[in-house]
Length: 188
Image 1 (cartoon, rainbow, N blue to C red):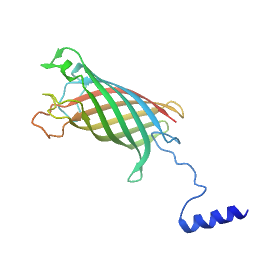
Image 2 (image 1 turned 90 degrees about the vertical axis):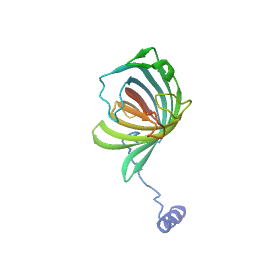
Image 3 (image 1 turned 180 degrees about the vertical axis):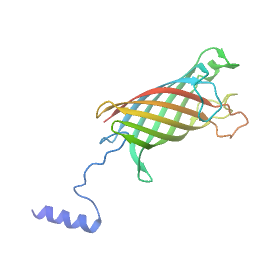
Image 4 (image 1 turned 60 degrees about the horizontal axis):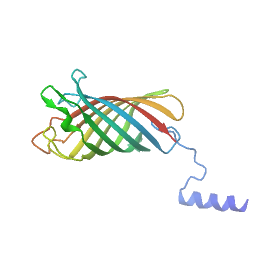
């Protein structure tokens, strides 16, 4: 009883919530960690929000680790992603096998809307690709993404996404990479 009283007094004066309830985050639920595997189909487009009309033999595979956070009081997540683009052959005047390049990204996603197990989010990030090429002209990458997610249960979820990668006009060539894809998330 004496210990509870001492801890309570310290908590009141220090402003520390001793018995605070866990806060639910849109992306990770009540968990503090999340991993995701993402697969994307490449689209040939220079637009920020490309229409999925010109699929190309270009693919994105990435492994993402995330933790929950907030952004101006909105549920959010911060992520580190390691990815690999893989291209095959030529289409629409581009030789896609030249763009088989590993990349690493730091990003943040913010929930825009949520209804029961469904959510919509947007995100942005910055990263590096292992080599520059004539499509992007720089190793520096900027990312913009739109996400629609669904929680299958407390741990597992699915996300449909659109990812746009460009160099943010830091080099003369900036034709961008764009992907539509599917991600599987596991929160723990």
